[in-house]
Image 1 (cartoon, one colour):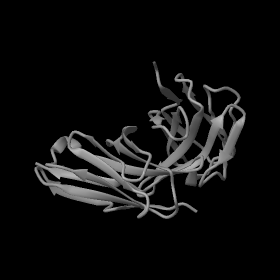
Image 2 (tube, each protein chain N blue to C red; image 1 turned 90 degrees about the vertical axis):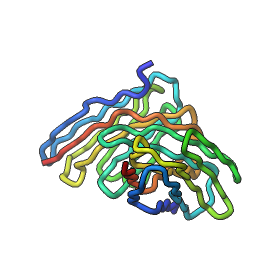
Image 3 (tube, chains in turn orange, green; image 1 turned 120 degrees about the vertical axis):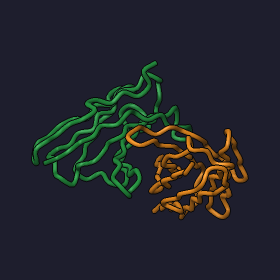
Image 4 (spheres, rainbow over the protein chains, first blue to last red; image 1 turned 60 degrees about the horizontal axis):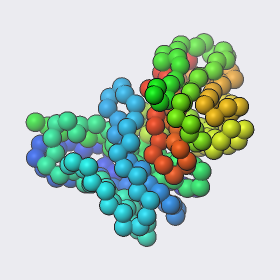
Length: 109
Length: 112
């Protein structure tokens, strides 16, 4: 059974700092996703990672995938308040896509 | 394009009532899915479909039925609502199971 674990589950950080969110999963997979959710809103796709070593960047966010370690990271560079949100990773196995519990990110001005 | 449209946005049910949550997409996506979101639990997969006429169970299917008679629509039926089904329900679609998913705005369901 596929399990997806994110850590930390809650992160409070200062503007301007760097930090990394980790996503571990329990079985082999062929794809990994990162989503953002603002309070009371729907989910927005950030990245789709389809191969080992894949790295994608958008603004201050960079995601990477290590399929051998079953690990993905979402790195935040020089955080700004607008990045405050909940970030979810999701892992695809066959036709199922399983989500982690999310990392609630709070960036202090 | 409207994308993924869910109705209703809010609903209150009494225990034992039945209802259908509607989900429609206009992107000609083959893959559609239903999730429920509860505090501290992330999103849990209820049912999914890889195309018209094909559905399968996710992580938490009990108490829910789905059907996929057309590519566009993927309704979720609650057979006999229970307070444990109080949640926010999201429908999502993607071109295939490997692509990025587009989510609806969610249905907030309360069962009393």
